[in-house]
Length: 133
Ligand SMILES: [Zn+2]
Image (tube, protein in one colour):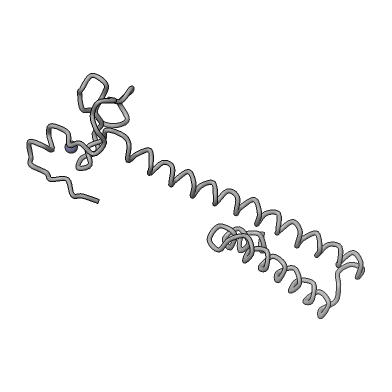
């Protein structure tokens, strides 16, 4: 746990290479500190233990980086899809297939005729102006 959280954080925010370097550094640091203060087990067992630790941490880094990449792609795709919905940009209500404007959670199915970015009647009445971009 002491080594896993920094590796997960590094993989999520910095990427796989940095997390692998951190995993290797932490394992080497652990091995050298064991060397300096005396191994709690035989040298060979400590060596195998640290190599397995490094490989496991790199696997965690790989999986975390894959998850972070998928999350970024899904967020990007969600933003693209939200831009295509007939949702009022001012208050967030959506236009239903029958032309009524309702909160987005209550709407199924959505209108196919209302262009994305259209103001709802309430916001049009209040005189909001859609800002480009
Ligand atoms: Zn509105």
